[in-house]
Image 1 (spheres, rainbow, N blue to C red):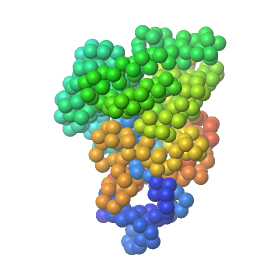
Image 2 (tube, rainbow, N blue to C red):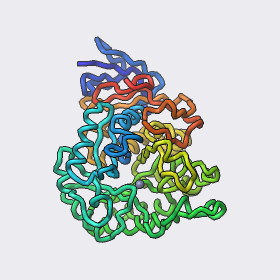
Image 3 (cartoon, protein in one colour):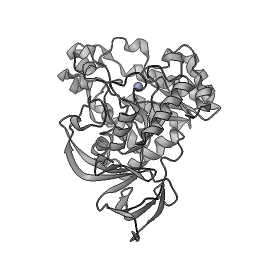
Image 4 (cartoon, rainbow, N blue to C red):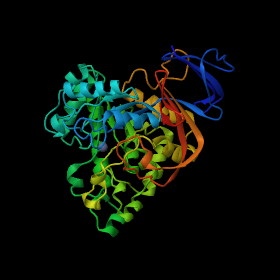
Length: 428
Ligand SMILES: [Zn+2]
């Protein structure tokens, strides 16, 4: 059994403590622990967090291994401090059967860098017409509890109602990509001042907000759980706040890029800023930060969306939508939430580990840093400053909006059940 002593780290940003890892488990947390025969990691000035959990990752396997595989995606996740990611269902073939979700789950187990929890499609082929085999995917080895047609909205209210009713039986949740399809036909960016000036088709806030309003009402009506993916507008925040005030079972996520970037960047016509939902306004960004700080938004989710060079390095209208995010997520959250004083590190642990694990009903992740718990841990150096260089990414894709930007913080170590997957910022 391998023993590791992490010495003097600020646990969840609080007091400095020693943490002894024995095998797969945290054996002891305290001051002045005896290292004995353990390997010592000096962690003075570093922050120790529970391993991060992502509710929204696109791993692209099966079908688009040219942009990402389960192996390269889980390496990127480990570098970013994640010990578990939920893999979205919009693969080729779509993860709408027990067979496909079991394949993704098995590939995750084999990677050894990060646990992979597959998300099942809500409808067959993401076509929005017929419910997929939700029960069979839940009963499979993958144990699916989160279902989503992400990339597409479940826009048929009857199908959405049936899905919510169905998943209730096993405490599942439907994660909705809230986007009224008729209101966003041909849309290229946020609908507003900038889209009017550039003459690009706009994506109105109401397209997102109208679906959220409908779905929180549906979830309340059938007494089931709904999770709203990548909230992007101030109005969406108000709707989720209202639904929570009613005591309804509604949760929501925000991406790092929606906490930092605005639609002003589209003036560059650089397709790296093309994303779904689109970058919004400064007022939206500030509302999202405030909502994440006060807990209206439950968690940060990356929406890591790898695309090969040829799908992004082209004219704006033809470019694919999406950004990679696993390797920069924690740095963007530090810059927008911690360094601004909106959230402390305990808050980061809550929004990036405890709550996403709870929403996904993931066992063994999002646990306290205390004796007897699985040693899924992330060690962060908040004093670090570095310029983002996608050439060094573990992900197979490079479509980051942060290239050349200085961001704070760096994950120095990641531990998956006591085994180091990242050491000194590099893959172990
Ligand atoms: Zn989406």
